[in-house]
Image (cartoon, rainbow, N blue to C red):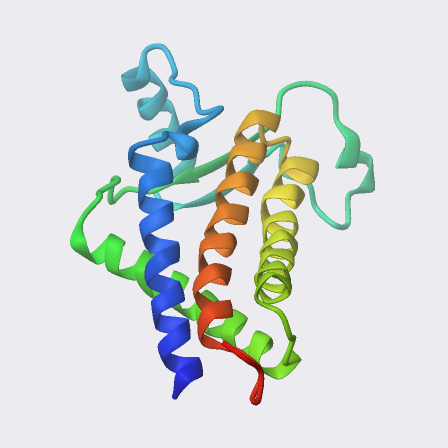
Length: 180
């Protein structure tokens, strides 16, 4: 029961931090640029995608076509949604749920590790967060040429997200028999 409570509280802490990071500090927009003549670009994207939501890479590289693996010129990674973008309660609920699941996993790992010492437990969760951040943001930087400032902003956001969860989890999940 204490793992569940700690995980939920850690998820709330993660959600609060991520909300502040994006809305107040602007870390979610670091490296994001706007396009000139957005309407003309949207018209072209609709035509090029058949107006179908999806994830698009260009030039397209097939596993069978190794010659295209290193093609000169422009390339891109496009997430296109015909449904638009909305900061609504459903989106926020999904994000809070995702962070709660992440925190529950970290809580379970921390409980299994049975690490003595508050700051060591915090460090354990922080290192788990570093692994998460590098496996997603780092790989996008390597493979899809995501901008370095955007990547570093997201890695920092993730690290602090796991730090605040770690502060909560470490307080609740002391090994049995350890002093408060």
